[in-house]
Image (tube, rainbow, N blue to C red; front, side, top):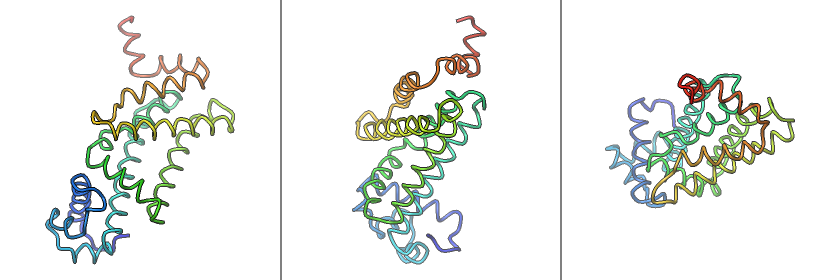
Length: 215
């Protein structure tokens, strides 16, 4: 964890530099010296506040995870509380938020996943992120399914999110949010009662727009 005292301007500057350097040279090439030059900050500052590269990587991932959590919360806040299907889709959209699809963030995520297997603190962050996603999904699914089934479907959706994200991250064309939503919606249609989708059509902005136009 960074020490108290890092100013609000310099910390984001360093985090941005980490992602830029990881984007350009990969995780293993992202030395403290190179990150410092990119951020126009001395390596001594990084070592003082973050204890070196690992501490700065940890702070960077905490920032990325906070953006991810904010994206999901923003999507949920804009969705009708009674629209279970819409709220699950909101969670999916939050995980494919544009902030998560920037090239430097995508490569930082890939580096994080690989490095977390050998770094206890990063591994804990990954577990927290995983539990948070499953918690969001279970909360909505339990409103329509028995608890055991809701847990099973939540894990299926989480696996689809991770798999689609990873395949897109390794695809030269990038991550396709529309395709992700289409695939996960198709999965949901096989798991949830049809009346929930009828309710979704009535409550969602898209469904209301269609009702107004008569289409």
